[in-house]
Image 1 (cartoon, rainbow, N blue to C red):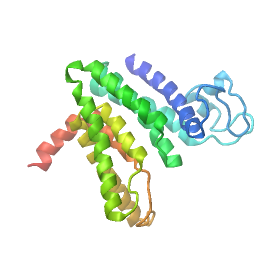
Image 2 (cartoon, rainbow, N blue to C red):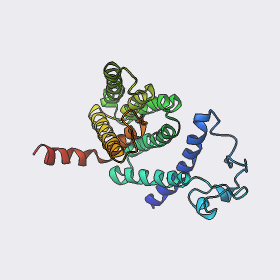
Image 3 (cartoon, rainbow, N blue to C red):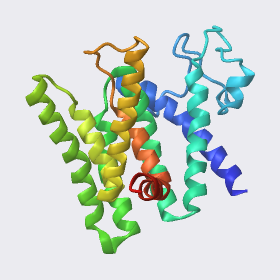
Image 4 (cartoon, rainbow, N blue to C red):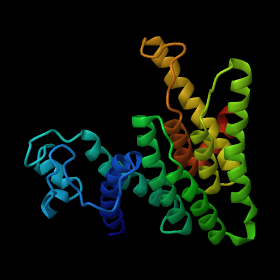
Length: 254
């Protein structure tokens, strides 16, 4: 029953995140007007706005102009509940589940906006920092310094890397949006979790770039958005931290 509820709620939230991803970088309201086709402005009727199901019923096309609806809309409506269920299976119905669900709901739009526009918006990261601090402290008031240190560790580490990149390569190696994104994620975590998160982000990014270069898809001076890797590292850190630490202690150190 709980899994069904989380899946339905997650799909609804995923549908809303699609609106956020499309409208926020265009400085449009995420509240009004209601959902509509971006090509012909057809206002979606209730049955056309059911997460997942409507996409399948409409066969991925607008009911009026028949313009294809990007498959990514369906992907986000599916991936959002899947990620929330993954968090639930890891921590149950707990404060950590609620806090980490909020983080995931911030990671998803930040990731796809960065992929589309090479931007990580202050409208996501700055409120996200306060949300992270508030939720972390409310859940564990006795250790109120941990999220503050996490915020400083997340933002400070990326700021230092950006500074070193500027000094060594004489060009911007990491944007301010990435730094604030790291700080936002850190506000939801302990410094230890931030360290794991950023290590995984750079590790995944390095593998991606190496494979891209080997396949000829990425040139030596190509720029790639780093936000998605930060998000992947953060999700892995909050959902698989104990397994990652166990793997490191038992396989890497021995």
